[in-house]
Length: 204
Ligand code: 0O2
Image (tube, rainbow, N blue to C red; front, top):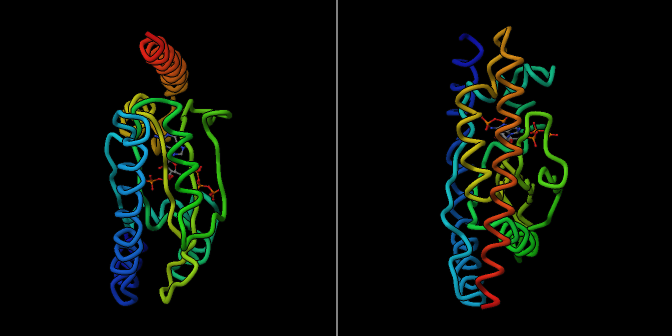
């Protein structure tokens, strides 16, 4: 609790939330614009919706502990590249790749890292594409923004699993983790099936 309060105070002093919000506010209209442009090209809705979040002091302290790092604002700013985050929810699996591809090429940003948890899901069953981008010109302390791109089906699983299990170290939860992973596999199959059906309808 003390560490969280200290982190909250340090974040206030250094205007971290405001800086994260500025990064989000600069990028969000560009993502919406590219969503409209892709929807125009493919004549259907490509991006369902977008959300954003600024990492909370609790979550920052928890992550620094999880990664065995010193718990300080300096360490957080230096090593956590998802203090500012945007999530883009797409209709179908192939849209996830289209949107991620377009975001990677956004003018004014450099792609620092890409993680494809669709090709290689996490041990939990989590699927998503993560992009870490850095604005080419920035006067802020916060230099990175994480964009998570996933389908509506992947998001459905991730949101429920996050609530039930993600940061929960309870003993005896192994069976539940296994069942959640099975759910992720089932949902991925349905996601693929929906894509196949869309492609069949497009051919008619
Ligand atoms: P929160 O509360 O969402 O902020 P890295 O240092 O980049 O190598 P990092 O940052 O742990 O490693 O990246 P990773 O593993 O790609 O995951 C970052 C974020 O993805 C997490 O943020 C979650 O939002 C989401 N995520 C990753 N794995 C899972 C999972 O198994 N289930 C769910 N529901 N979400 C997941 P945080 O900071 O852990 O949490």
